[in-house]
Length: 369
Image (cartoon, rainbow, N blue to C red; front, side):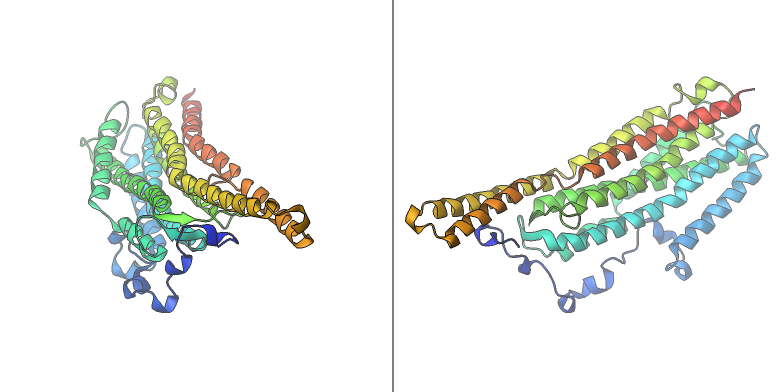
Protein backbone atom coordinates (compact mmCIF):
# COMPACT_ATOMS: atom_id res chain seq x y z
CA UNK A 1 0.00 0.00 0.00
CA UNK A 2 1.22 3.54 -0.72
CA UNK A 3 1.24 6.59 1.50
CA UNK A 4 -1.87 7.73 -0.32
CA UNK A 5 -3.78 4.47 0.03
CA UNK A 6 -6.24 6.16 2.36
CA UNK A 7 -7.43 8.22 -0.62
CA UNK A 8 -8.04 5.11 -2.74
CA UNK A 9 -11.41 3.40 -2.94
CA UNK A 10 -9.85 -0.06 -3.35
CA UNK A 11 -10.30 -2.48 -0.44
CA UNK A 12 -7.36 -3.38 1.77
CA UNK A 13 -5.14 -6.21 0.57
CA UNK A 14 -5.41 -7.76 4.01
CA UNK A 15 -8.81 -9.17 3.04
CA UNK A 16 -7.31 -10.93 0.01
CA UNK A 17 -4.44 -12.90 1.46
CA UNK A 18 -4.80 -16.19 3.32
CA UNK A 19 -2.33 -17.05 6.08
CA UNK A 20 -0.62 -20.38 5.48
CA UNK A 21 -2.12 -21.87 8.61
CA UNK A 22 -5.64 -20.92 7.53
CA UNK A 23 -5.38 -21.98 3.90
CA UNK A 24 -8.41 -24.07 2.84
CA UNK A 25 -7.81 -27.83 2.90
CA UNK A 26 -8.24 -28.25 -0.86
CA UNK A 27 -5.46 -25.71 -1.42
CA UNK A 28 -3.03 -27.27 1.06
CA UNK A 29 -2.87 -30.49 -0.94
CA UNK A 30 -3.50 -29.35 -4.49
CA UNK A 31 -2.13 -25.84 -4.96
CA UNK A 32 0.76 -26.14 -7.40
CA UNK A 33 0.64 -29.96 -7.55
CA UNK A 34 -2.21 -30.64 -9.94
CA UNK A 35 -1.73 -33.43 -12.49
CA UNK A 36 -1.44 -31.98 -15.97
CA UNK A 37 -3.57 -33.33 -18.80
CA UNK A 38 -0.80 -35.16 -20.69
CA UNK A 39 0.84 -36.38 -17.48
CA UNK A 40 -2.21 -38.55 -16.85
CA UNK A 41 -0.53 -41.03 -19.23
CA UNK A 42 2.33 -41.56 -16.76
CA UNK A 43 2.07 -44.83 -14.78
CA UNK A 44 1.90 -44.49 -10.96
CA UNK A 45 5.53 -45.57 -10.29
CA UNK A 46 6.81 -42.65 -12.39
CA UNK A 47 4.27 -39.98 -11.40
CA UNK A 48 6.95 -38.13 -9.43
CA UNK A 49 9.42 -38.34 -12.31
CA UNK A 50 7.54 -37.11 -15.41
CA UNK A 51 10.70 -35.88 -17.13
CA UNK A 52 12.26 -39.35 -17.02
CA UNK A 53 9.07 -40.90 -18.36
CA UNK A 54 8.80 -38.58 -21.37
CA UNK A 55 12.51 -38.88 -22.19
CA UNK A 56 12.18 -42.68 -22.13
CA UNK A 57 9.11 -42.52 -24.39
CA UNK A 58 10.98 -40.24 -26.79
CA UNK A 59 13.97 -42.57 -26.89
CA UNK A 60 11.83 -45.64 -27.61
CA UNK A 61 9.82 -43.89 -30.33
CA UNK A 62 13.03 -42.57 -31.92
CA UNK A 63 14.61 -46.02 -32.03
CA UNK A 64 11.56 -47.42 -33.81
CA UNK A 65 11.61 -44.50 -36.26
CA UNK A 66 15.28 -45.06 -37.11
CA UNK A 67 14.66 -48.78 -37.63
CA UNK A 68 11.69 -48.19 -39.94
CA UNK A 69 13.49 -45.43 -41.86
CA UNK A 70 15.65 -48.03 -43.62
CA UNK A 71 12.50 -49.44 -45.21
CA UNK A 72 11.75 -46.12 -46.99
CA UNK A 73 13.12 -44.53 -50.17
CA UNK A 74 14.71 -41.66 -48.21
CA UNK A 75 15.76 -42.91 -44.75
CA UNK A 76 17.30 -39.60 -43.68
CA UNK A 77 14.21 -37.51 -44.47
CA UNK A 78 11.94 -40.07 -42.78
CA UNK A 79 14.07 -40.20 -39.63
CA UNK A 80 14.43 -36.42 -39.48
CA UNK A 81 10.70 -35.82 -39.71
CA UNK A 82 9.86 -38.44 -37.09
CA UNK A 83 12.64 -37.36 -34.72
CA UNK A 84 11.59 -33.69 -34.78
CA UNK A 85 7.96 -34.66 -34.32
CA UNK A 86 8.95 -36.82 -31.33
CA UNK A 87 11.00 -33.95 -29.85
CA UNK A 88 7.94 -31.73 -30.08
CA UNK A 89 5.76 -34.46 -28.60
CA UNK A 90 7.90 -35.03 -25.50
CA UNK A 91 8.67 -31.31 -25.10
CA UNK A 92 5.04 -30.20 -24.81
CA UNK A 93 4.38 -31.70 -21.32
CA UNK A 94 7.61 -30.20 -19.99
CA UNK A 95 6.78 -26.82 -21.54
CA UNK A 96 3.29 -26.82 -20.00
CA UNK A 97 4.75 -27.83 -16.64
CA UNK A 98 7.36 -25.07 -16.81
CA UNK A 99 4.73 -22.47 -17.75
CA UNK A 100 2.57 -23.60 -14.83
CA UNK A 101 5.53 -23.13 -12.47
CA UNK A 102 6.19 -19.67 -13.93
CA UNK A 103 2.57 -18.71 -13.28
CA UNK A 104 2.81 -19.97 -9.69
CA UNK A 105 5.98 -17.97 -9.14
CA UNK A 106 4.30 -14.90 -10.64
CA UNK A 107 1.42 -15.43 -8.21
CA UNK A 108 3.81 -14.85 -5.29
CA UNK A 109 4.57 -11.42 -6.72
CA UNK A 110 0.94 -10.76 -7.63
CA UNK A 111 -0.18 -11.14 -4.03
CA UNK A 112 2.10 -8.22 -3.15
CA UNK A 113 0.74 -5.74 -5.71
CA UNK A 114 -2.94 -6.70 -5.48
CA UNK A 115 -4.77 -4.15 -3.30
CA UNK A 116 -8.41 -5.08 -3.80
CA UNK A 117 -11.01 -6.97 -5.81
CA UNK A 118 -13.20 -5.60 -8.59
CA UNK A 119 -15.75 -8.25 -9.58
CA UNK A 120 -15.93 -10.54 -6.54
CA UNK A 121 -14.43 -11.01 -3.11
CA UNK A 122 -12.03 -13.88 -3.71
CA UNK A 123 -8.53 -14.37 -2.31
CA UNK A 124 -5.76 -14.39 -4.91
CA UNK A 125 -4.68 -17.93 -3.97
CA UNK A 126 -8.18 -19.36 -4.33
CA UNK A 127 -8.75 -17.49 -7.58
CA UNK A 128 -5.49 -18.72 -9.11
CA UNK A 129 -6.10 -22.30 -7.96
CA UNK A 130 -9.41 -22.20 -9.79
CA UNK A 131 -7.71 -20.89 -12.93
CA UNK A 132 -4.94 -23.51 -12.82
CA UNK A 133 -7.51 -26.29 -12.59
CA UNK A 134 -7.91 -25.87 -16.37
CA UNK A 135 -4.43 -27.34 -16.84
CA UNK A 136 -5.73 -30.65 -15.51
CA UNK A 137 -7.66 -31.07 -18.72
CA UNK A 138 -10.93 -30.02 -20.25
CA UNK A 139 -13.18 -30.93 -23.20
CA UNK A 140 -11.69 -27.96 -25.05
CA UNK A 141 -8.20 -29.42 -24.68
CA UNK A 142 -9.41 -32.78 -25.97
CA UNK A 143 -11.18 -31.19 -28.93
CA UNK A 144 -8.26 -28.87 -29.68
CA UNK A 145 -5.76 -31.72 -29.67
CA UNK A 146 -7.99 -33.95 -31.81
CA UNK A 147 -8.67 -31.19 -34.33
CA UNK A 148 -4.99 -30.40 -34.75
CA UNK A 149 -4.18 -34.11 -35.11
CA UNK A 150 -6.69 -34.43 -37.96
CA UNK A 151 -5.39 -31.27 -39.64
CA UNK A 152 -1.79 -32.45 -39.32
CA UNK A 153 -2.57 -35.84 -40.90
CA UNK A 154 -4.41 -34.09 -43.72
CA UNK A 155 -1.55 -31.62 -44.27
CA UNK A 156 1.23 -34.22 -44.20
CA UNK A 157 -0.67 -36.52 -46.55
CA UNK A 158 0.07 -34.13 -49.43
CA UNK A 159 3.30 -33.68 -51.39
CA UNK A 160 6.24 -35.96 -50.58
CA UNK A 161 5.66 -36.76 -46.90
CA UNK A 162 5.93 -40.42 -45.78
CA UNK A 163 2.46 -40.51 -44.22
CA UNK A 164 -0.32 -42.99 -44.96
CA UNK A 165 -1.33 -46.60 -44.47
CA UNK A 166 0.60 -48.22 -47.31
CA UNK A 167 3.33 -49.76 -45.17
CA UNK A 168 4.50 -50.17 -41.59
CA UNK A 169 6.80 -47.16 -41.96
CA UNK A 170 4.11 -44.80 -43.24
CA UNK A 171 1.60 -46.10 -40.69
CA UNK A 172 4.08 -45.47 -37.87
CA UNK A 173 4.90 -41.96 -39.10
CA UNK A 174 1.17 -41.25 -39.29
CA UNK A 175 0.86 -42.28 -35.65
CA UNK A 176 3.79 -40.04 -34.68
CA UNK A 177 2.37 -37.06 -36.57
CA UNK A 178 -1.10 -37.53 -35.04
CA UNK A 179 0.21 -38.02 -31.47
CA UNK A 180 2.59 -35.08 -31.75
CA UNK A 181 -0.08 -32.81 -33.22
CA UNK A 182 -2.51 -33.84 -30.48
CA UNK A 183 0.09 -32.84 -27.86
CA UNK A 184 0.67 -29.56 -29.71
CA UNK A 185 -3.08 -28.85 -29.71
CA UNK A 186 -3.18 -29.46 -25.96
CA UNK A 187 -0.21 -27.13 -25.59
CA UNK A 188 -1.92 -24.39 -27.58
CA UNK A 189 -5.00 -24.72 -25.38
CA UNK A 190 -2.78 -24.48 -22.29
CA UNK A 191 -1.23 -21.31 -23.72
CA UNK A 192 -4.71 -19.91 -24.28
CA UNK A 193 -5.65 -20.74 -20.68
CA UNK A 194 -2.48 -19.03 -19.43
CA UNK A 195 -3.11 -15.81 -21.34
CA UNK A 196 -6.77 -15.91 -20.31
CA UNK A 197 -5.63 -16.12 -16.67
CA UNK A 198 -3.65 -12.88 -17.09
CA UNK A 199 -6.62 -11.24 -18.84
CA UNK A 200 -9.02 -12.27 -16.08
CA UNK A 201 -6.56 -11.21 -13.40
CA UNK A 202 -6.56 -7.68 -14.77
CA UNK A 203 -10.35 -7.65 -14.78
CA UNK A 204 -10.69 -9.14 -11.30
CA UNK A 205 -8.29 -7.18 -9.07
CA UNK A 206 -7.17 -3.66 -8.25
CA UNK A 207 -3.40 -3.31 -8.23
CA UNK A 208 -0.61 -0.97 -7.17
CA UNK A 209 2.17 -0.01 -9.56
CA UNK A 210 5.90 -0.02 -8.89
CA UNK A 211 8.93 0.45 -11.09
CA UNK A 212 10.78 -2.71 -10.07
CA UNK A 213 10.62 -6.15 -11.69
CA UNK A 214 8.99 -7.81 -8.66
CA UNK A 215 5.80 -5.78 -8.98
CA UNK A 216 3.28 -5.74 -11.80
CA UNK A 217 6.17 -5.71 -14.32
CA UNK A 218 6.79 -9.35 -13.38
CA UNK A 219 3.72 -10.15 -15.52
CA UNK A 220 5.55 -9.28 -18.72
CA UNK A 221 8.64 -11.23 -17.66
CA UNK A 222 6.56 -14.31 -16.89
CA UNK A 223 4.73 -14.15 -20.22
CA UNK A 224 8.00 -13.63 -22.10
CA UNK A 225 9.47 -16.81 -20.64
CA UNK A 226 6.29 -18.68 -21.56
CA UNK A 227 6.48 -17.30 -25.11
CA UNK A 228 10.07 -18.53 -25.46
CA UNK A 229 9.05 -22.03 -24.34
CA UNK A 230 6.12 -22.06 -26.77
CA UNK A 231 8.17 -20.92 -29.75
CA UNK A 232 11.01 -23.37 -29.05
CA UNK A 233 8.54 -26.25 -28.92
CA UNK A 234 6.60 -25.05 -31.95
CA UNK A 235 9.82 -24.71 -33.93
CA UNK A 236 10.31 -28.48 -33.69
CA UNK A 237 7.00 -28.98 -35.51
CA UNK A 238 7.70 -26.46 -38.27
CA UNK A 239 11.20 -27.90 -38.80
CA UNK A 240 9.81 -31.42 -39.06
CA UNK A 241 7.68 -30.41 -42.03
CA UNK A 242 10.77 -29.04 -43.77
CA UNK A 243 13.15 -31.91 -43.09
CA UNK A 244 10.51 -34.56 -43.70
CA UNK A 245 10.04 -33.79 -47.40
CA UNK A 246 11.09 -36.87 -49.34
CA UNK A 247 11.63 -35.10 -52.66
CA UNK A 248 14.73 -33.26 -53.86
CA UNK A 249 13.41 -30.03 -55.38
CA UNK A 250 15.01 -26.96 -53.78
CA UNK A 251 11.82 -24.97 -54.34
CA UNK A 252 9.88 -27.48 -52.27
CA UNK A 253 11.92 -26.59 -49.20
CA UNK A 254 11.44 -22.84 -49.46
CA UNK A 255 8.59 -20.58 -50.51
CA UNK A 256 6.36 -23.33 -51.89
CA UNK A 257 6.43 -25.29 -48.62
CA UNK A 258 2.94 -25.19 -47.04
CA UNK A 259 4.43 -24.92 -43.53
CA UNK A 260 4.78 -21.17 -44.14
CA UNK A 261 0.99 -20.97 -43.95
CA UNK A 262 1.31 -22.24 -40.38
CA UNK A 263 4.55 -20.55 -39.26
CA UNK A 264 3.52 -16.96 -40.01
CA UNK A 265 0.12 -17.09 -38.20
CA UNK A 266 1.79 -18.87 -35.27
CA UNK A 267 4.34 -16.09 -34.90
CA UNK A 268 1.61 -13.45 -35.08
CA UNK A 269 -0.46 -15.33 -32.50
CA UNK A 270 2.42 -15.42 -29.99
CA UNK A 271 3.04 -11.67 -30.29
CA UNK A 272 -0.61 -10.61 -30.30
CA UNK A 273 -1.54 -12.81 -27.32
CA UNK A 274 1.44 -11.39 -25.36
CA UNK A 275 0.08 -7.85 -25.71
CA UNK A 276 -3.69 -8.36 -25.78
CA UNK A 277 -3.91 -10.44 -22.59
CA UNK A 278 -2.26 -7.60 -20.66
CA UNK A 279 -4.69 -4.88 -21.74
CA UNK A 280 -6.90 -5.19 -18.60
CA UNK A 281 -3.78 -4.86 -16.41
CA UNK A 282 -2.79 -1.82 -18.47
CA UNK A 283 -6.17 -0.28 -17.63
CA UNK A 284 -5.73 -1.02 -13.92
CA UNK A 285 -2.29 0.63 -14.00
CA UNK A 286 -3.77 3.74 -15.61
CA UNK A 287 -6.49 3.80 -12.95
CA UNK A 288 -3.91 3.52 -10.17
CA UNK A 289 -1.85 6.42 -11.53
CA UNK A 290 -4.98 8.52 -12.03
CA UNK A 291 -6.26 7.92 -8.49
CA UNK A 292 -2.86 8.58 -6.94
CA UNK A 293 -2.34 11.77 -8.92
CA UNK A 294 -5.82 13.05 -8.08
CA UNK A 295 -5.18 12.43 -4.39
CA UNK A 296 -1.82 14.22 -4.54
CA UNK A 297 -3.29 17.17 -6.42
CA UNK A 298 -6.01 17.50 -3.79
CA UNK A 299 -3.44 17.54 -0.98
CA UNK A 300 -1.27 20.07 -2.80
CA UNK A 301 -4.25 22.33 -3.40
CA UNK A 302 -5.02 22.29 0.31
CA UNK A 303 -1.41 23.03 1.24
CA UNK A 304 -0.99 25.82 -1.31
CA UNK A 305 -4.19 27.50 -0.18
CA UNK A 306 -2.44 28.52 3.02
CA UNK A 307 -1.84 32.21 3.48
CA UNK A 308 1.77 33.24 2.84
CA UNK A 309 2.37 33.93 6.51
CA UNK A 310 1.27 30.36 7.37
CA UNK A 311 3.70 28.72 4.93
CA UNK A 312 6.07 27.46 7.57
CA UNK A 313 9.11 25.29 6.92
CA UNK A 314 7.01 22.24 7.79
CA UNK A 315 4.31 23.13 5.25
CA UNK A 316 6.89 23.90 2.55
CA UNK A 317 8.52 20.55 3.27
CA UNK A 318 5.18 18.79 2.77
CA UNK A 319 4.66 20.63 -0.51
CA UNK A 320 8.11 19.58 -1.72
CA UNK A 321 7.45 16.00 -0.62
CA UNK A 322 4.14 15.68 -2.48
CA UNK A 323 5.49 17.41 -5.58
CA UNK A 324 8.31 14.87 -5.60
CA UNK A 325 5.77 12.11 -5.06
CA UNK A 326 3.74 13.43 -8.01
CA UNK A 327 6.83 13.22 -10.22
CA UNK A 328 7.39 9.64 -9.08
CA UNK A 329 3.80 8.67 -9.90
CA UNK A 330 4.06 10.33 -13.32
CA UNK A 331 7.14 8.23 -14.11
CA UNK A 332 5.47 4.90 -13.25
CA UNK A 333 4.95 2.47 -16.17
CA UNK A 334 1.54 2.07 -17.76
CA UNK A 335 2.05 -1.39 -19.26
CA UNK A 336 2.86 -4.53 -17.21
CA UNK A 337 5.99 -5.28 -19.22
CA UNK A 338 9.32 -3.56 -19.72
CA UNK A 339 10.55 -2.55 -23.16
CA UNK A 340 13.08 -5.39 -23.06
CA UNK A 341 10.23 -7.88 -22.50
CA UNK A 342 8.39 -6.49 -25.54
CA UNK A 343 11.52 -6.87 -27.66
CA UNK A 344 11.89 -10.40 -26.31
CA UNK A 345 8.34 -11.30 -27.31
CA UNK A 346 8.96 -9.95 -30.82
CA UNK A 347 12.14 -12.02 -31.01
CA UNK A 348 10.27 -15.10 -29.80
CA UNK A 349 7.59 -14.62 -32.44
CA UNK A 350 10.26 -14.15 -35.11
CA UNK A 351 11.97 -17.35 -33.96
CA UNK A 352 9.19 -19.47 -35.46
CA UNK A 353 9.68 -17.93 -38.90
CA UNK A 354 13.48 -17.86 -38.67
CA UNK A 355 13.59 -21.54 -37.68
CA UNK A 356 11.42 -22.42 -40.67
CA UNK A 357 13.58 -20.33 -42.99
CA UNK A 358 16.82 -21.80 -41.64
CA UNK A 359 15.44 -25.34 -41.93
CA UNK A 360 14.50 -24.64 -45.56
CA UNK A 361 18.01 -23.50 -46.45
CA UNK A 362 19.67 -26.42 -44.66
CA UNK A 363 17.38 -28.94 -46.33
CA UNK A 364 17.88 -27.30 -49.72
CA UNK A 365 21.68 -27.36 -49.26
CA UNK A 366 21.58 -31.09 -48.51
CA UNK A 367 19.53 -31.67 -51.66
CA UNK A 368 22.07 -29.98 -53.93
CA UNK A 369 24.35 -32.28 -55.92
